Length: 467
Image (cartoon, rainbow, N blue to C red):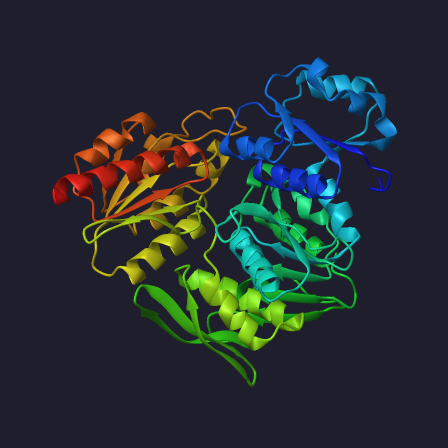
């Protein structure tokens, strides 16, 4: 498939974080963009405001007529979340229309542009958004497809000033081996911890997939990889330039890490090169490591040290990645997308370092029955870093229940912590009766629907105390 002579782009599942970014890209390129999604969300409402026509009923008669009339100039993109019995999907297939996964289309875009691809079972959204912000704020012509809403841009997409000669920064998703469709000139690998075992079966297959991704880098390309991950993967025989990074103990590292006025401050060190002090408004040592990768990519692309330093200080992160929602002199509330034991461990460890001695209450919604089953011990161990744990039922996403796999099973494995399970709809009532010091909501499901109501509740509580 080529994108020449393209006029109409139709999305089945336009409201997803990755799909909506593609929709905006094609809209900006001057194409007619329309789509379907199951429900209205803040993302779909914003797309409609931007001039994209969306309907929310699975009805083939609502498909934009030009998509049907002119298949040779139309592109149909679908999300794998579309069910097999979806009427519009099956109607288009029956008519002989070609349909493409989001990853296939993103692969075509990256094949036509100089591409920085960021992969990792965690850390890829933060790292890719940081790279994009450094490039954008330094005046480079770039585009970015990121799996989260970048706070600096209130979007999951950065558009180029012109399509020709732009650098594409793409988050490379390992789910369903999507990242193997990309064509990177530069790649970053932040982590390769076991995940998506419902897709891969075991960690060996997952690691092989990351090796396959690395082999997609062009011969004259560059790989920046976290040192621990490089040790885990077999990188022998690769004809590319490889550099490793880590907090310490390797060529690219962080020096003089400290906390000043609630911010993590560090210096970037690479052989004889030193940049700093760098102030990161996005807490956590894991985010310092992400910054090391982002800075390394930017230096490789010729961005000046002064531009990098200014960009790191102005970077405000990604929504739901260590996002501070509320703070006063009594309570602080953070929200995080963490849904893997290592992500929870990094998040809660950073909270404890940032706010030493304070009581942390963590509300966690497990994501997927298979992930809860496969990593139950790891979840229990990482959640024990909190002083109080409140579990809500598992968010199933695309899965059917698995007998014996539930939040009750997970709760039993958590030791030496004040712990309980409540329904999602009871969380606000529970919190309204508690003294809250440090609160953290954690998870990749619909726990995000609690964030705004919790913030309002805390604001009202503070106002009533003041009055």
